[in-house]
Image (tube, rainbow, N blue to C red; front, side):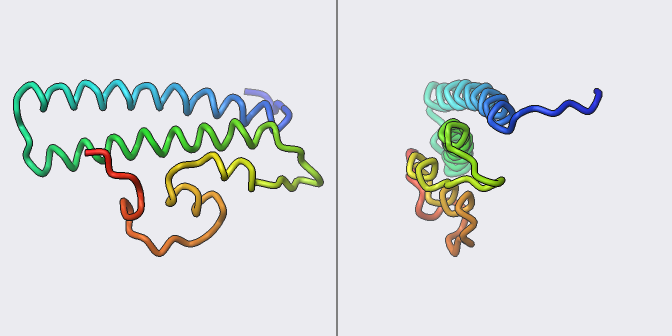
Length: 116
């Protein structure tokens, strides 16, 4: 590929689209995986933890996609962009603190919404 220069908002939009695609793949896996264990009646702890990890994956990808969507419409000034508005749309504390550049003292799933 040749050296191609494009505007940053265009690249962000492309990345957002790819994250949306991966988010949908994760949702399909989550549903299939959840249905499999529900139908088989398997409620072992490892199965539930795996489902929780898949759900967290999907939520994280969704937060990144939403953040990029709002960031792409933000005004840039000298290579700087205000991320406050884009951060307000993220749901997971871990994602919000990571994108804000704040070191999180929480362990991986701590403070995030538990669905399963």
